[in-house]
Image (cartoon, rainbow, N blue to C red; front, side, top):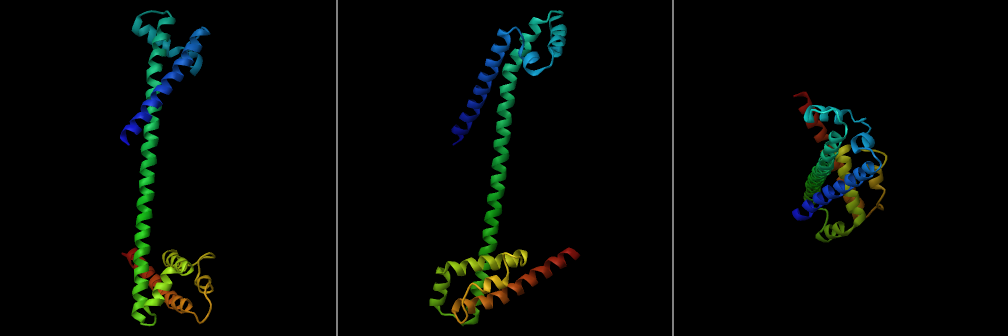
Length: 200
């Protein structure tokens, strides 16, 4: 994996190098210089560089040296930018993954507390629990109850919408009625703790 990543950086450098080399060849063939012709600096940096380094007012040598520096420096800059983008992308992906794992852990805790509540009632049989676990609509409603517990009700997630998913006088409806009351109590409990922490 590391070799593939290193190879991608080497390829980026070589492609950038080849591109700058082609551009420099084209500008030199047309009688110009890459820095002045391609980047519109009008050769001022090259003239200053030439004057102080080579102690000459000649324009040509300084521009060639500057173009040679560009041939190495610009691919390095492109490669560093590619590296920074790669690192930033990995950091953001890692953060999203950690957030997703944390959210899943919180949901599992909520689902466990729901299971314990239904067990405590002694109203449902083992077969009922198996049926609840295999019922996709029921499991989807548990996720909606978790969202309501976490964020409160809205037009897409409300106790009314959850309740109407099931026919009256069914085991699912009976369980959901209990769980709506349980969820609302837990939500109020959570809101009370948050309010208390805010006051502290």
